[in-house]
Length: 412
Ligand SMILES: Cc1ncc(COP(=O)(O)O)c(C=O)c1O
Image 1 (cartoon, rainbow, N blue to C red):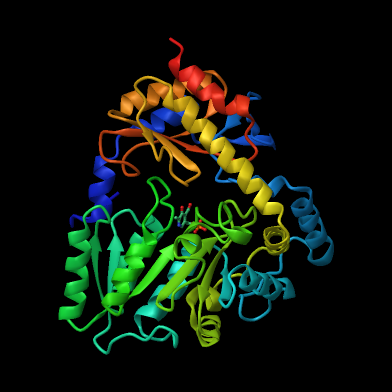
Image 2 (image 1 turned 60 degrees about the vertical axis):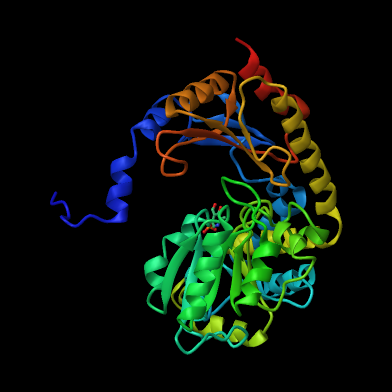
């Protein structure tokens, strides 16, 4: 195989990745194949039963009898799939789902995509080109201002974004870097389009209210990927970012959510203020024109999930989730030598940060031996040489399952 001679980010990244992922797969710590699942217990292909803290199913909705019944109904009505591009034929239930999202987020217009990555790929180029009527862009184009920890699905399309303008990065931990980026946009006559997560997939909560205020000062837009924040908090499960913004979406903010995590279905959605944006996106966003519509079974599951958000079912599950998160913090907080990432925060994700990859590998192995699955991550997910055990906490975990982690890590 011939190797490209030119150095680039992908090559450099690959050169810094150690064999830790491969070793972890070999040791049965990650890369699992499962054959069954019941609550938080999964059966692995080798027959072992384990308790998992891996799935981003923060509310456990995908096992709710109403959701399961919705999928059965979809199969009876449509078969497994309707294969057409989204903007040629789509099941009527997608429109109903978008209407219900409009009730969860009053006053907003929702557009559902197959995935959050598809939202980014569909929306950001049109936004950058100044083609969304609700979000006009300066004649000199946009400056995409990408937060250092913003999800990889936004970072990876930087080259695409640069077809419509320039891009730079900032670090939310370094407010000066944000101000510098906004001034750069101002000085070059560009509209800043700030890309951030709401609840970080590995880190903590982003202060979206402060970023929103500052972006507005510079006549910019704030584009929030709150994939992990949807459903877990807020009235009707509107989520972390919506709540943090004061229960509404300011005029200069675009909010993106996931239907594949706590929502219990699959896909992603965008919320905009102007119905004209939706018309343009349906007609011109790449995934709408060239991609399939969401799988029919998931459309109906998503629709049922939206109903559970609006009828109070989700608020009970939220309470169970946050009780479990508090228990996790209490029990791990009592464990010696533990560096607990996100402790005390309104994120359903916790991490045990380790100084070396080897430490993370051995801690994951210890848990695996006790029948507990976490998600051990290494570079490029965390800094080179370090490791982190990631835990996704769910309303469906039992107290005993949660307490077993601290028990295993503290017993010698
Ligand atoms: C914050 C965030 N954004 C986007 C994605 C990508 O989601 P999707 O698979 O729906 O494209 C993820 C995936 O887990 C995520 O954590």
